[in-house]
Image (cartoon, rainbow, N blue to C red):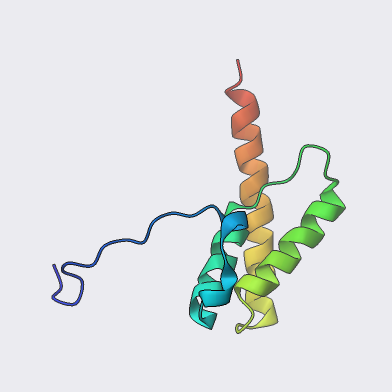
Length: 94
């Protein structure tokens, strides 16, 4: 194990809505935005247009310092992954 990693423990997992953001630095908020983006799921009654808009917003927040092209690629990948997960869940319901 790398000497700088020895003895380092992971922080406790806190559900995103309950996080008090006042004590966070920019890096931690950026990481929180990435987790929110990567864990986003389309709502049961959410239209595809609304879902795509929400994913675009989340990607923009999560990758705000990167190029627009990169953010667009991440957005498309997230939409595709959610669709794939939804198909998998539907096929495993039976």
